[in-house]
Image (cartoon, rainbow, N blue to C red; front, side, top):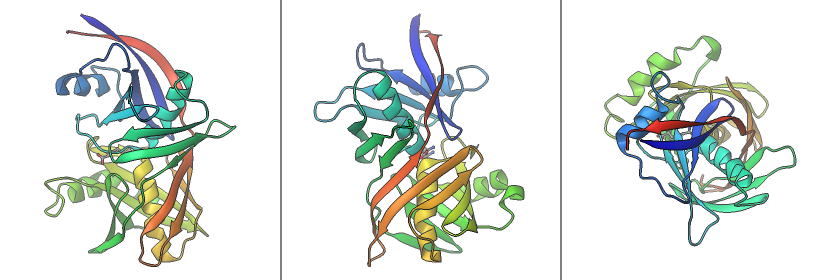
Length: 260
Ligand SMILES: N[C@@H](CCC[C@H](N)C(=O)O)C(=O)O
């Protein structure tokens, strides 16, 4: 048996298991990742994050969805930054490696994390939706009366539909609620359910909304709390200096036994 120490964090209700995997370095199997993220038989979370040493950057963040697939996680990255500060790896700014490349982030005086996202090449019309890749693939659909929208049913059907069947997609339902303000609800691939917030999804929704005359910074409300997205829109419809800003907090810590 191996005992694993972990920390549980949440960022606007998107919750993650964080493990300091610098020394000794654990190798987790696919089955172990699925077990740890299981809300009935394990710890339970929307994902698992390993913080590892890296030769060139402050640390490497290795993210897994609850089904053990990998991608970029915006909310998880913000948790990882606060966890790296807690571990004494960084002070208030950092460059770290994640699934889609190197990210800069800063921790503000109020503890919120401002994460620089990768530049986004374009937003693409796809049927009655807009496709945006913010390190993870996202489809944006505009709806009205979002509170009563059937996110699980509609999101699941699109995620498993013809176009996206192979690689999957995260499906974000968006309502414009004010000047430069949106409400976003996301069906996440890899979780295969609606989560309370999705950082790369919120970012994709804000960029897509610039085609509907919303300007930076876009205020984003989710079921799990509030975020803000800053960006520069270029003439060719690419985006640079994209930042995701919001809270990321430790919830509890513990240890769990694995048969290894
Ligand atoms: N919750 C995340 C997104 C995690 C990755 C996503 N489920 C995928 O596989 O594309 C976020 O905050 O960005």
